[in-house]
Image 1 (cartoon, rainbow, N blue to C red):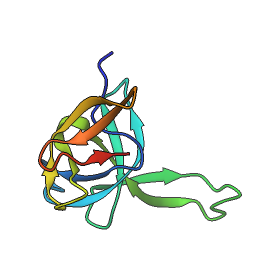
Image 2: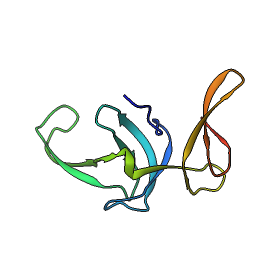
Image 3: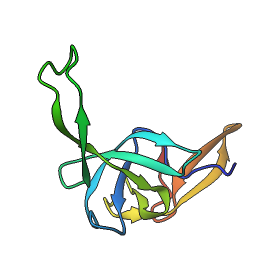
Image 4: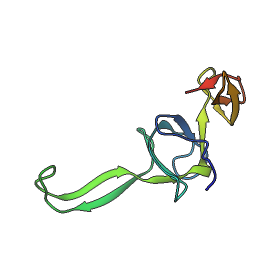
Length: 107
C-alpha cells in the first residue's frame, strides 16, 4: 500500500467535488479505502439514520461528515495558507514531510 500525503490533524483544502474550495482539519484517514473525513463548516455532510441509544435517546436522522477521496484533498501550506504538494526529506536522521511551495516542515 502506498504512503499517503495526508495525516490526521492536517489542515487540507478540498480541490474537487461539491465541497470544492472548503478548508478543514482531517479527523480520520482510511488508507485501505484512500479516503479521509474532514471536519469543517463547508464540508460535505451525509445523513445517517440512527436507532435510539444512550448518546442519542431519540434516535432519528443525524448529519455527519462524509468521507472524501484523498486525491481530492491538498495540504494547506502553513506559511502562505494556500494548497501545496507534499515532499519527504531526511532531516537530522529522521524523515519529515515538507511543503513544496515554501519548503517549511509539516508536523
